Amino acid sequence: MSSVGGMIDNIPFLDDRVLASLEEKTGRLIKVGNDRQRAYAENVLHAIIAERRQRKESAVESQNQAAREIAEEAGDNGLFDRVLLAFTEIPPKQQEAAVLREIASRPDRDATSIAHALGKQDAEHIVRVIETLCSTREAYLDLVPVQKRRSDETNYNGLLIDFTLHVVSRDSRWFGWTLKPDAHAALKQLGIVN
Image (tube, rainbow, N blue to C red):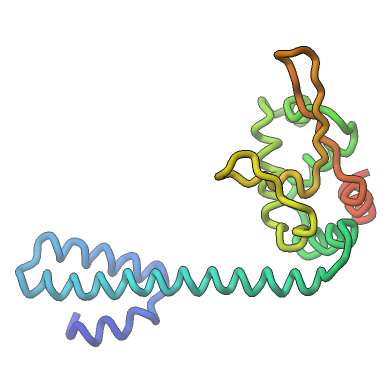
């Protein structure tokens, strides 16, 4: 490490792995170095923090730009066309396709029954898979309103799934999961579901 300015000037050109290594070395120098070394290391650390912030902001802007481009491509199309586009651009993973097929095969079952049919223990597996599948394709599917579970939690599952409330008794209720008709038709056309 020659000059502070020289090191700081190179920080934007370092990949994330090298930047992390430099940050670790800088942190050690702050703890064990003499006053001059600590001052040097603190300047480098501030530059690393600023670079990480810049990279994060750039990544967010890139994601926003990509979402705008996707939204422009999807245009005013309905759910059927949006699902076609979404699943053509981002094909489902094997596990995602299996969950979609199981939901489509027998609509209006609860998530626990769907999970058991796939050899999984509980409903959380189904919720996570569909949540990830939908949130990954949100820019394509955003024509459908995203529901809020709670004030701090977005329910992406509603982008593709219709939920039917079943009340068994005053204390017993559950939700049936069914693919939205246009989503089912599009996924069927793509050969993802039957």
